[in-house]
Image 1 (cartoon, rainbow, N blue to C red):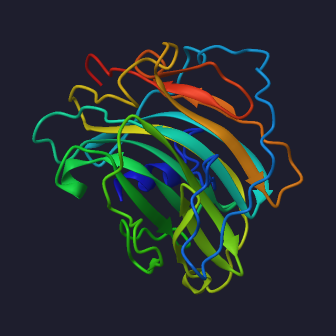
Image 2: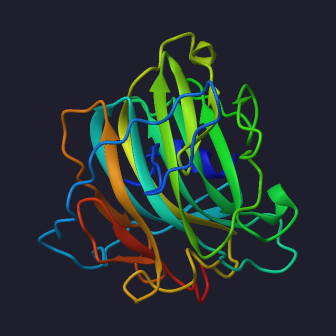
Length: 286
């Protein structure tokens, strides 16, 4: 998978995948006989001392296997059984007919050695989905081995919310991951979508030590950049956002550290301990 392979490469501080669990304020009822995510009271969004875009000295895009990847990422080192966010579902533009590029916002939980990961998010990816609308996806890594989108052991539970389905751009939704009874459950707007059985990791991955929420774009080497988020810079009003960040089963207070690989192309704004804006038009060569 192009998305997570870069994250596991460890080339930058953004090589953390994220896992987060979330429910909307008006959470929908979960599918009968399925769990609901644990939701702690939302903390007030205290502004960070430096509520500004990331430093200009970004690491630059991560390029390998003929493609380059850029990130605007919020991350926290901790020890959790789950985490949650809400975020805007945007419809970034990618080049017509380009089946190699993508633009997404994702949430994942990752082990301390960065080899095991559970992910959920939305992506605009013509090669994966056959169109340029945003679609829900799930993914996972097992001990450093990649798998596939929306399958490879994922157990579907919901009859109405399915990985791969199109989501409505311009609306907000909750994305969540939580370990329940040894299995990693994925939630969308408070509804249990399904789970990755703990047996995939032989029971060895039940808690995560790295939580990350981010926007990502991928483009061919030497190509023009894709839009991130809704195409507006993260410092602009109306840009895409990730917020309501929460931890489950942790003694730590939620506190995101936000960075960008190429802040001249994609940046962040209005940073708080639990939220940030992100995006960019991606104009110019990458």
